[in-house]
Length: 295
Ligand code: FES
Image 1: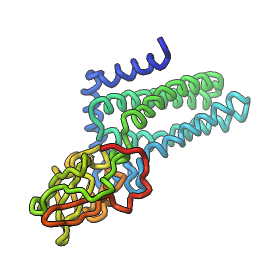
Image 2: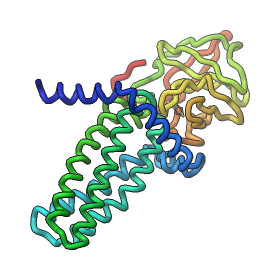
Image 3: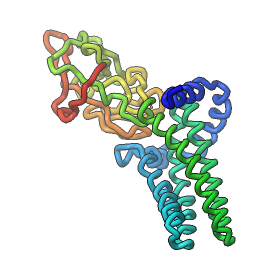
Image 4: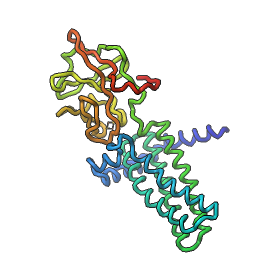
């Protein structure tokens, strides 16, 4: 069997392992309790920087542990290697917290893969803690061995993390490959668009969220950039729409994120009304997005 097929089989097993759902739910409830909603959760999600924070933070422990391994294999300074292992352990904590926070908003296969990813990272962290202790007590070789074991487990965890992001799209703006039509497109009668409430439209296959604000009709992508929640099922007030899934809040005029866990703004469409019909088209503010796209 080809190595790729082996990897795929492992992934399929994890993605469909319903046995992981119960411990995942218990852990997710504990994380949600530990990370208060509002500024703390927004920070952990990466809302202020416009991207998930977790991928940026993981570079620190991985870099520290890799540097320690380099010193181990080049007969470098043992004390520096021990310190690097210790720094990696400390920096793994915020990394784990932000990852766990992101993971609470996943479901199904993503949640199962994320659970195994977290368990493997915890095992790796324990091995590195053992490595630090062994080095501290003068058992250098044992410390090196434990570090190598930790690196192996960490590699498995990283592979699953890659699968989460690049195959399952966790953390990716769910509208990344979506684009409103370039031409004005009829999405329904003006009279059907309410104020203080949203309604769904269809712009040539792209779902549009429509509402009224300050006397005008405004249009955003209906698919929440966070995990794809349907904005038209959310609540609208004070010029903002709240996603029904994880309560991200977006300004209806420009799609900006008012509250996370979303990190990316909602795409906005230009709107015009002709003979009582609402037309939308791609906004010029998104002209940089030229990826091949779909609906
Ligand atoms: S899907 Fe998570 S906040 Fe919208």
